[in-house]
Amino acid sequence: MCEGDYGIKELVLIWQITLSLLHSTQENETSAVTFILVGFSEYPHLQVPLFLLFLTIYTVTVLGNLGMIALIRISHKLHTPMYFFLSHLSFVDFCYSTVVTPKLLENLIVEDRRISFTGCVMQFFFACIFVVTETFMLAVMAYDRFVAVCNPLLYTVAMSQKLCWSLVAASYSWSIICSFIFIHFMLTLVFCGTKFINNFVCEHDAIVAVSCSDPYISQKVIFIFATFNELSSLLIILASYVFIVITVMKMPTTGGRYKVFSTCASHLTTITIYHSIIICLYCVPTTKSSWLLIKVASVFYTVIIPMLNPLIYSLRNKDVKDAVKRLMSFRLSS
Image (cartoon, rainbow, N blue to C red; front, side, top):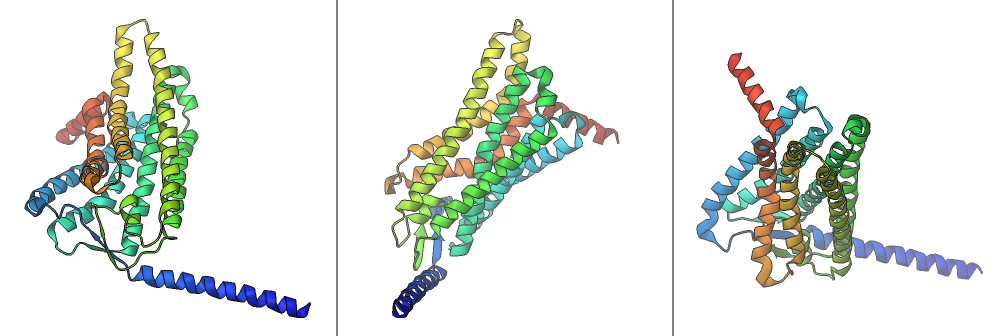
């Protein structure tokens, strides 16, 4: 019996040593990994024009989103649940653009496009957080519009400050959970040597494509979670707007209908652009011939959409335009 016990202990010890050696070998292989972001290097004549274009877009994105946050904080008329969610959407857009665009700009003007394994994983991690958060923030904003239109008398009670903070916290929390799960399964893969990532951003499909091990499980996990996130958020949005349309059609006056549609127009425009590009990326197969299309679509949802959101809400939203006018007149008079 003692010999049997010793045999079991030895087997357990050997198993632990084997696991530790495998883990250390994977760590040693991964630590020596260097990624090179290919980006738009296939078009050397476009490097400077693209740099100037993306720099302009990023400047507008930073000023637009931070300006929107500041305007909402300053203007008391904008201290409503709708603009509370909009301020967080602007914050997410600013952060998302800042995670991606500076590295894109750097790679357009330098020949050394290397990025460390840790740097690539961190960029992917934070990009995931902000993409998932934006997905559900747009769904939360659709629910807010549903309550405002369908239950206007109970709006301030139903959309209490506690509920608003809970919805925002839930969006951030779920996005962080998703990102940790994606990173966990990505780190189970083995990477070795110097690999070319055929994109300007450390995106999941591009990273696992250069793995030295089978990425099947990692790809399936992210596909399941991404599908759930997309479908659940779209379901909330579609259900909210179905009820909004039904309520609007019952309104006796045209003026009331126009007011509701004008209020929802900015949000509808944003979700249409955002989800159209996400669905487009879903439908594009990951093949060598489709990488250019994937890059262009990635530019839209990582660089251009964060710039468009504050522009859409400032140009199409009467409350925001009035707040800007009041702030400008106050500055001029003082």
